[in-house]
Length: 392
Ligand SMILES: C=C(O[C@@H]1C=C(C(=O)O)C=C[C@H]1O)C(=O)O
Image 1 (cartoon, helix red, strand yellow):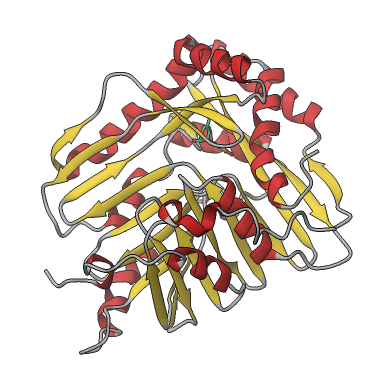
Image 2: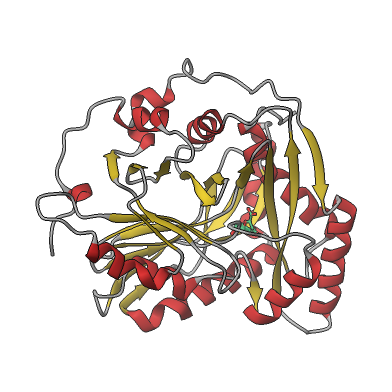
């Protein structure tokens, strides 16, 4: 196997990752930061709307004596809708942002935007609660097991939002997760900070980290810990989580010579939420299967859709009065060897002109309450509201 650029041993110098974060410019650039790498792609050598075209496009663009090309971008939630994948003209790599001492310095953050946001909730929180209640009634009648229902906030302002500033705030606040900013369609930019790894492949090793079952954080330390402990013991959340882990195991098993799935979830936290988390690891039976092949086999997991998948898709289409677009799709990168990282597209917004559309959803099971799911989605919005300086 050839050595790709990101595997080359390198000297780490402070500020390398922060420099990529600061260099990001919308439209021309694609930024992706993970706990392993920071990437900044510049320019577009090729656009790809169908994931199956990725291997041939990367092979055709391979040139001797230059680093092998890679693909960055996002896939939408909806099956069959076009992807927004691209091969950048150049890619700069840096070590993880969280290891960069400069990212922790408080000074360079420019503070909140002085935007006067007009905010419209679509659907209104009461309508969202009613959709949750209707889904709960159907699940109690045994029609299906789980559905993830989402809502949006449409933010508009008199001036175009400063997307690089938002990206910097997202990256600085949640340094342990995955931060991204890239074009999601003509005139549109997807920006977000997701805690959830759909799948990463490194040679024959794979890792997936499904999250499901959540609780809002509290500013009060004792209350924060109480909520974390309650989440670990909540039967409703453990069930919601188990449904996702089972689906991930079943989707990955056919590709694996070995697959390890811990019996009980642990906790992960973002600045706004606690989540139940399971880290699944495995070894591929056929190393020809790429990270994107695995992501396509997994997507959509019941962490963002439901169980059974097709029933849940139907409930989502009938209940949500908006198009999810890239939200709850997949975002990330992959190189010509098939190594890469694909993340679940959540805690994000899509920017277009002077407006931003924020998305948040919650897993609904028979034991769910409309009030708790509305509060959970409100907490999920906080990740992005902080980035636009609108979290009051
Ligand atoms: C759907 C979202 O998050 C997903 C749903 C979760 C849940 O229901 O507990 C937790 C993490 C994500 O898998 C979102 O953030 O919008």
